[in-house]
Length: 214
Ligand code: G3P
Image 1 (cartoon, protein in one colour):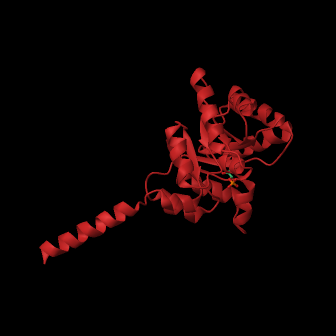
Image 2 (spheres, rainbow, N blue to C red; image 1 turned 60 degrees about the vertical axis):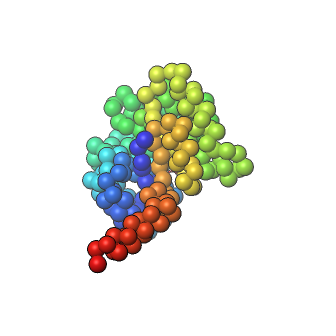
Image 3 (spheres, rainbow, N blue to C red; image 1 turned 135 degrees about the horizontal axis):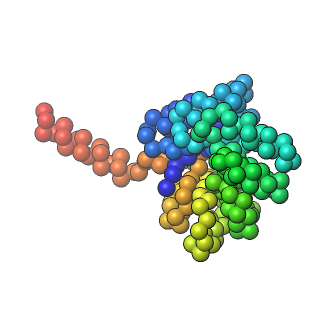
């Protein structure tokens, strides 16, 4: 499973990429807006120097402008993945990008039919938002289970990227369902290597070592 970080903060990408397990970054306009003063293009290019796949979201809503934006973003660096919203105009853009060899991530996916349409349009990845379904009292991971079940019947090459992750349990369930990628917020990322029994066990090993090496 690929691990992405969901942030537009370059320092956080630098910190986690130094662990050696980070495959990519996803950004979106809301995350970019949190990084006041940072230049978007420069941030994306710098992130591309740290990881293999960086999603940069286009903001146009009509196909001609979306297509033009996709061309611009993909010209910045070979590691740019153009993030395209799940709309009819977005489907046209995905088809265009696919024909040009531009990698894409379809964002704001909330249903199996949306997932299938994005895959048929040649999307490299789709991003179902699990946390936002949880927010509505649903179980967002059910959508991932349904999409993975559908994927088992066909030969879609489109990777399923679990987005809007809020906790470790989302990551665990994504892995057990065989999702291809998780994009994880920084705070949840910091929890991934942690376990109380690891801390306790290490403390005991250190104490025992001290007792014999004095
Ligand atoms: O990358 C998009 C997605 O992860 C957004 O998450 O927490 O705003 O629902 P959230």
